[in-house]
Image (cartoon, rainbow, N blue to C red):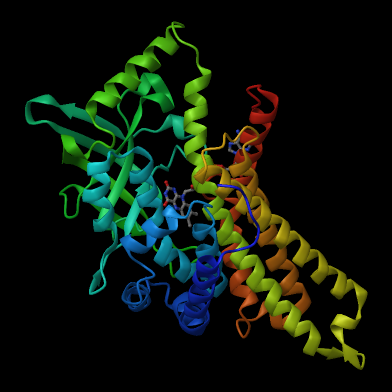
Length: 409
Ligand SMILES: Cc1cc2nc3c(=O)[nH]c(=O)nc-3n(C[C@H](O)[C@H](O)[C@H](O)COP(=O)(O)OP(=O)(O)OC[C@H]3O[C@@H](n4cnc5c(N)ncnc54)[C@H](O)[C@@H]3O)c2cc1C
């Protein structure tokens, strides 16, 4: 599929549809759910009822050969509100985990259960981070042990900072099968609804994204059927054998590290598009405010310092979006991320979101610092985009390794 920046009719319809929902449903509710710090189930239900939050809709996003439907929908939703946006689309993290490692049968079984149905929507979680393994996922301590007699996997340990942790219907948990092999000895498991031993006792209070549930989860002898190992046991055994060969110097290392990088590169543009949504929301609000706020007898936008800031905001947001769209197109069309273009998109968009939201607060002055206006919330919400799905420092590490071919530390 060739790359065109002109959206087709379906993409324009999608953008307008999600924008309408974001403007009419998310925006008016954003402040309330930010204050309540609770999962906005009624809004998730509404999204499910109109078909925005559903397995089928996600499948159509993925089917778009340009790769742009996913970032378009995410940008609009997060333009509406990032906290509620993540409460709705946080499920995509778990779905992406199943998608990237699961067999077609596993996809068919588990992805619909991540969403539930319009009358009874559910959410999903993707659990990688741990208290001692954030940026350094290779030091993961959660263990998965195979009980051959029962054909079951037994999971033990603690996960930290998990979006939808404990409230998800389906948890996708990444665990170490062979700690000696570090990241290459890890595998992803589906923990089906209601599995005993998975508990969440601590919901985390955060700077922003208050409508999105973040929690630690504890796995205490959590037993899941052998079929819950994503990709299946034969594939895992093959992968572990290869990794042992690499460790013993019997096979080259590069192909495997590239494969792992490709998986992250695929999901990062989606997160980048969410950051673009917040940045655009802050810019839109600041632009209108600057045109209307009068000081020294004229609108504040008449001052170049304000107008130029808005010009830079617009330019930076467009620049971030272009990087996001390029990476989304590359991912969908199997183009190799030779310069870590997925990481570039997330890095740029995250930093633009933080900068734009901060500039918007400045343009509003005291009003920007108050809860009477939404830019204060956007400022708090934006900050996560330089932290999760790999911090800005980690993105720079990935890009510098990709362009240099060296193991920069
Ligand atoms: C709201 C929220 C939602 C989240 N949702 C999920 C989720 O659903 N699933 C999940 O698995 N995780 C989730 N996370 C966890 C998130 O991915 C981690 O917080 C993130 O990866 C960073 O890990 P850390 O917090 O342990 O920071 P650390 O790894 O401790 O990093 C601390 C600082 O050191 C820097 N640093 C670390 N190593 C290097 C290096 N080599 N070079 C330069 N600088 C370095 C980092 O960039 C950072 O600035 C979530 C976090 C938050 C806050």
